[in-house]
Image 1 (cartoon, one colour):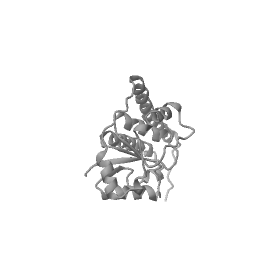
Image 2 (cartoon, rainbow, N blue to C red; image 1 turned 120 degrees about the horizontal axis):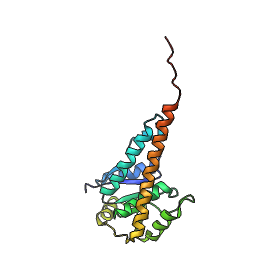
Image 3 (tube, rainbow, N blue to C red; image 1 turned 180 degrees about the vertical axis):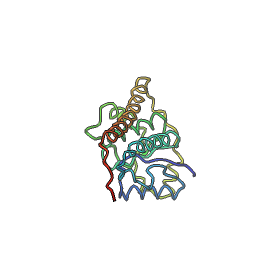
Image 4 (tube, helix red, strand yellow; image 1 turned 135 degrees about the vertical axis):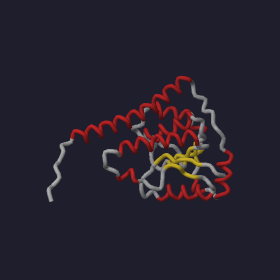
Length: 191
């Protein structure tokens, strides 16, 4: 099996369980495109960090669109960002594997929460790390594209949610660039 996938969820430096899952997937020939091993975005503070964040988000969503399935590592509540990724995977008819039962953040808006809840019966909730390699390989081999049976109205609303996500990142990037351009220029010290 030479597939690839990406993992949504609680992505933070030092999350050893997440990296153990990535290692397990690599043992059966699944490349995990996101998150990358280098999580330098968590430590970046320069003005271009926001633009790199936008580029990484684009790459992440492109990965969802082209991979055969999507994994949600949900050891914490599903927030707006993770819900948006799940909805995008649903729009692309990707089967979704969750490593636990869905738990929604209180701050999550009703549209993404209700959309995911309505179609949750299509989602596989299973602790992937507890599976033997052969069991995991067989499970992934059985996954097929899923018709989530969205109405036209649901599709329009979900696409608008995804566009709003990217527009928000662009707005943050522009604000960071403007703030940097407005900061006073400090002369360098003479040696």
